[in-house]
Length: 298
Image (tube, rainbow, N blue to C red):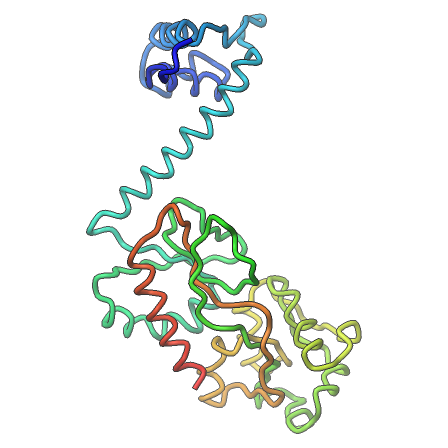
């Protein structure tokens, strides 16, 4: 059997036919005739010396060899599509697409966006907001900024920026403010705490760091995303839990207070990008973010 790869057109015809389970639909997707696809399938079977399909009624059924080639070709063509999309985005005039949560975007990034554009004018940063749907492997993202705990995935290049510090915050407008502002952390065990379903571990993590029984915490109003949780805290609806960078401006302005300070967690705010898509712009951005975060902590 020949060790050379079969003709690319034959592999394309097979991949489309196997994926769609139809010669006619494959021909339509490839913009060729039904006969052209059939001929390419025959070329591929002759090249490999095996049958890839059998007739089943009016349709087709993959043989064992066909199933193996379907899985391999699907993975290979998807990888090619992804890499081609990445290459087309890394041209000189392409923006650098950064994904991050809506709360991080609104409360930390946007207030600094003008400074970033002035400091890194060639970056042409484009921000893509999301919550749990953001994945650094998505072909339409160049990098992802998020809080996460190591160890890091082997296929990711991760720039660690700063440790995560979280703490309870409340507004002077909150009805319980005068009672709680000088109270010990144990006083929060009697409060109905504001919380978010996107960060369910935040309150228990803080309780553990504060030598409190996490099971004794009581939860009140819940919010889908951290951004809404912090807006509720600013509005005086209760005590919320927050990462320090996301409330730094509110603390300086007096919109929020943090009577119990912030505790370090095992998570890191980090910039992620796939190793296969290493981009020199990411290192510049990581250094800029690290400098800005250092100023936020001061």
